[in-house]
Image 1 (cartoon, rainbow, N blue to C red):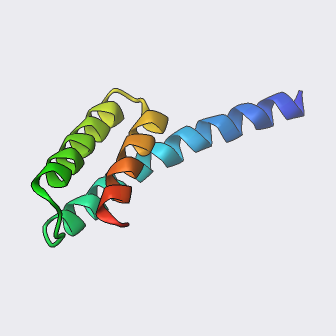
Image 2 (tube, rainbow, N blue to C red):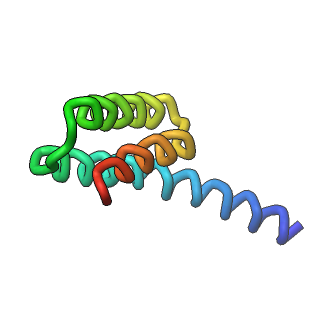
Length: 78
C-alpha cells in the first residue's frame, strides 16, 4: 500500500513540476528569440513551436508542451 501511495505522489509531483517548467521554458525562448540571428524560416518555426507549446501547456499536456518547447530551444541553440 505504501508503494502505491508513493507512486501516486511521485506521479502527481512530476506533473506539477512539469506544469511549472513550461512557463520558464517559454521565458527562455522569448528572451533568446529577441537577440537570436536566425533565418526567417527558423524564426517562424521557433515562434510556431513556442505558441504550440503554450497551447499544450494550457490544455494540461505538459509532457508534450516540454517536448515542443525543447524543439524550439534546440533551434535557438539553447
